[in-house]
Length: 444
Image (cartoon, rainbow, N blue to C red; front, side, top):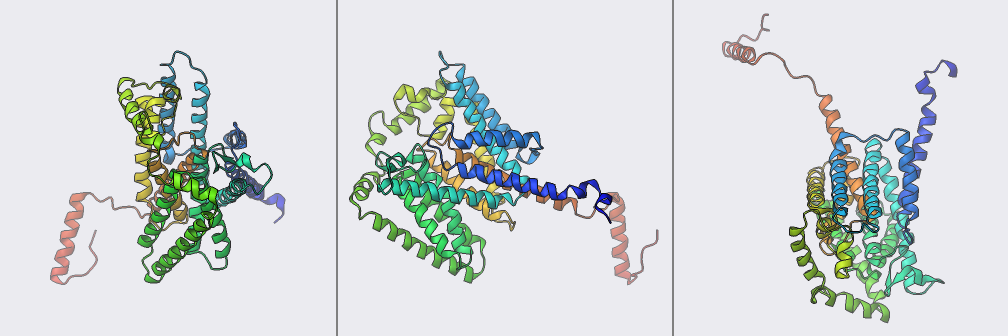
């Protein structure tokens, strides 16, 4: 058969495969850029704006499986628009809501492309790991003054990598750290040294960020990973391996932290940051008192008080994602945000232990997303780019599970359509034949 005789669809298969690979590589590059946010708009935003626009022109599909993510995020941002109407002067708030809406679009985008091709999950995670290790190295080297101009990668004597805030830098490193830890627990010994090295770099980066939220997030996430894997893996040998590897990893991490504490600048700051409650937390009009004041204000302002107004009013941001939703997005935004998180975790944990190719990615992203929700009580995650990436990964895996279930349901043999009374009569006749010893086929 000549090439001219091939069907048109078959003739274009190589081109389609090449385009799909190019598209996936562009997604991986976009994820890689998420680790470098020194200035705004960051390259991440500029690249994704173009990528999402091109993808939309050439067939980005938003399925019904991610409809809750789409609807609730849109309603959330509509709440922010209503909140602007309460302000005497809008200032820069329209741009703030525009960024919120764009980041919501990125979550939808990642969910849609993962649903379309589950193989993109591995590319996304690998790109994330590479970006995290590079930005962590910048933060570590800058912290110790090991590179010229390294102070640009630190703030307040804390490592922040290629970010604007150590409190975002630290949590950003947790998902790739968990990915490498999972590889250590389940992978081959051949790749173990590289994973150990990468994990130690990331953990040291988290430690030198001196972000209590990041420390807590890393501890919670690692503990959850070990517990879930012990529940999931039924064999005693594998459970023993997980326990041994976890203990070994814990010892190595403690050793790395002990080495870091030998530097005076590290030990002094650690002794101060390790306090559970800082002076600016429990003082008059401190963080916790501002939380109480803010929740009382929300009772009098159902539409919110306008994006960023709380920080201008009290000199400090809300440092609480729930209060942030109430103040900047009103009751409408708050209810939609709570509904989205409840919906996400309900479906995510329901599908968590099912044997699927995407299960490890769902497990890792869901654990870290859950940890982000916990630390959201003391920090504001509203415009964290990697938070929306996590949300997109989780919903992409949820959509894959729903598609798998739908396909399985469609493959089931058709159910009998005989009317119920007739089925009962046939069943009675069959019972009579068994009782009398007559096993001949029924007559029709």
